[in-house]
Image (cartoon, rainbow, N blue to C red; front, side, top):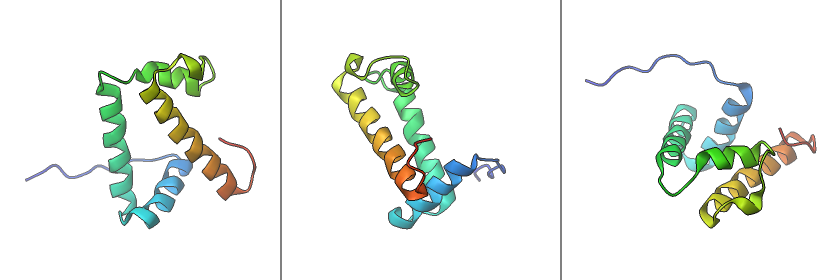
Length: 95
């Protein structure tokens, strides 16, 4: 028998993003969040992706050009997600 899940508070933007993604991925919101968590865990454990350097680029503390090709692909995906979210919110700002 597996462990039961524990209630967790999430930031509203994470929940809203998971809700939007779940509509196109045929997952429930909890399944979508769990899916993203597994991807994040794998990225952090990956020997080929420097997640600390990716985080520095996302924070504006390092240059995109300093990343290798696979890390640049991750950054592009995250930037696309932020741009899509900004367009959806109609604010014109990425958060």
